Length: 113
Length: 112
Image 1 (cartoon, rainbow over the protein chains, first blue to last red):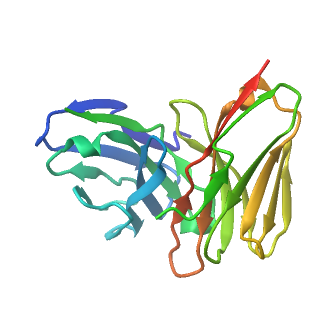
Image 2: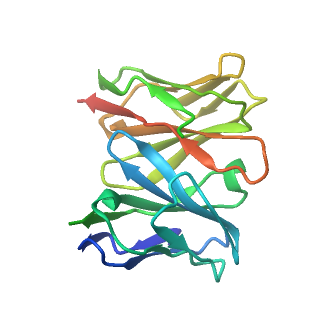
């Protein structure tokens, strides 16, 4: 099983550019989430989804947009990249939200210059 | 805002020794989970302990939970160099769809 797949693994953007981070899972999980990880900050929740067509904001949603048209895919869009969005981004999925273990992708390291 | 806080921030031990990491949290929880992250990789789930459980084991891992003190500990026995990683606790609240709230992690270095 592939589990949770994120693309790309690395990306450099210029300030003001937009891009989409892709996330796909093949475990038929209803719940998917996006986190960012910054040095000394742990993981912070950006957006999450409890099923196709349903999304909600996490702790740090500003500057990011999500949609969930299928169970498998949960893309994260950066609308106008800023240096403060330089981070490592992780996508995760699980069966029952926080009531079951989460499966993480390998991460996307994003640098905004 | 982060709920769990791990202690210590960094831990350096020799192979064969035991490693203990602690996690404290502030509000009531449904469960607490521990994850491992190797350098440059995603997080991997280790153990989930529910609020009505006090202790769980998985191989060389032992997790305890004290809800009265709002704290948990992760013990890795007979550490190996391959255990070198960052370890995170994540808490889950009791209401609705509850998301994982992560602490800042403990960086463990196990030297041969």
